[in-house]
Length: 191
Image 1 (cartoon, rainbow, N blue to C red):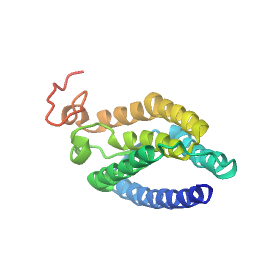
Image 2 (cartoon, rainbow, N blue to C red):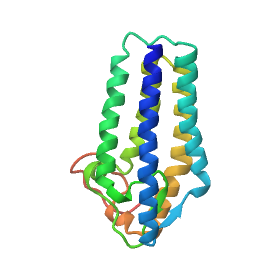
Image 3 (cartoon, rainbow, N blue to C red):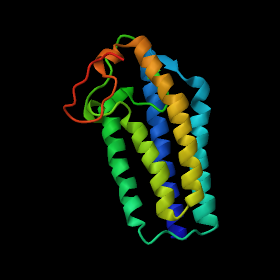
Image 4 (cartoon, rainbow, N blue to C red):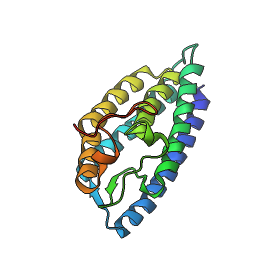
């Protein structure tokens, strides 16, 4: 597994690099559409959590050579399912997908694909992958520390900033009910 972790990190690093390139192109498009960026001040926190994820996996699994649990296929399968959901999120959002918070005033919020069922499915992907890949590798410290920090950044900082920006510049509250969890679940748009 020690050499395997390096391949995993390289592949994941390449994936993140492609996503950053896509996000940059989408940022240019959003700006050309009159987009407004929100949450710029907390973006380094988000990047820091992801860098800690890579560093923790490299150190704990790659250098110290952790031993994966005998049930490692389960968290690995969840990680791979999360990647499929990530692709669905990216394809559903199209040019609106970004690693930053860009909102284009007057544009309708995306409510297709997984966004029909959840408000922030891409964040569910991130939560899942930051927990499951380290667990599959036996990197328990990385799994715990990065997951707690990520949840704190998402729940206390990122999601509230995104919700506020979407509410300020679009008809988000009307288009996306207060809570959205299950297919066909109807709710009022009041808070």
